[in-house]
Image (cartoon, rainbow, N blue to C red):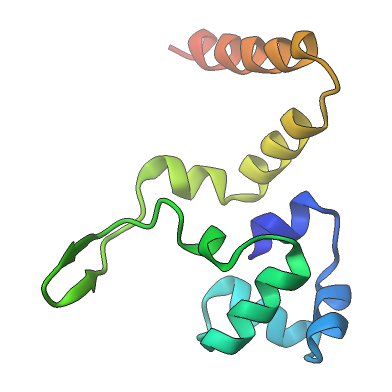
Length: 116
């Protein structure tokens, strides 16, 4: 939820207003301190302009006869959900040309490779 909210430049206060809850409740949902009901998740998806399935894409786990089994998020997912990951994704999304997106990717690769 946080990642999508930040990508569209929406504050916690604004999301809370649109959902009829406080920004503190939005914080608790985003941190995972409080569980979010199915109906609230549905309205959150609608408010954030994504299908409800957006929140389940890439969810670790597997289907079995007992349903979805929980698993730990992979390293990539954790990194991309961090503040820096969201900032990187936002910059990449806002780049208005293929050339700029290639530069962002190249710069990131250079930084990582220089630390090896």
